[in-house]
Image 1: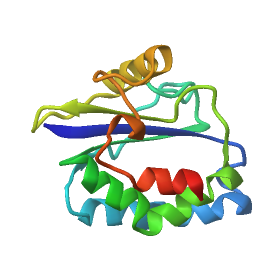
Image 2 (image 1 turned 30 degrees about the vertical axis):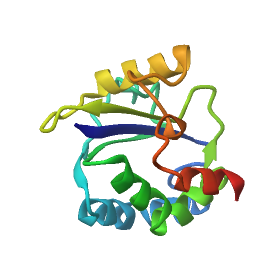
Image 3 (image 1 turned 45 degrees about the vertical axis):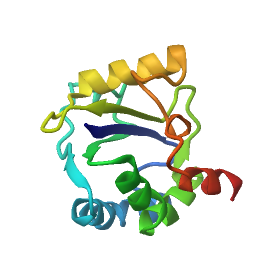
Length: 154
């Protein structure tokens, strides 16, 4: 099995403003690093959006999402917490609002499966409604990964 993950963020600053540059200037760099990282399998590159700017996950153009697949939780964990991604993540409060829903959901997929945005939204909704389960979960549901805990303490 591989690990699928969706994370979402909602802009609190104008994404084309100077205030957003600390994030926007690093998107291509971080995505490229992810794609070269051990265990990376796939990520959704294009976000299909409707006329109002929404998609299956997002209600409008001010919500960003990343949908990707990794070979193991440890591979994703190392990318998230042991690369420049961590520095960008630590700055998220500058650019993104707090959200009422979870902003990260993970779930298991068969090797070779490419998850859809619709499935990702269903998993996120399941996590919001039911908490961690084998259907949809966050870092705490993976007892063998610990770097996220160090982040929580920092």
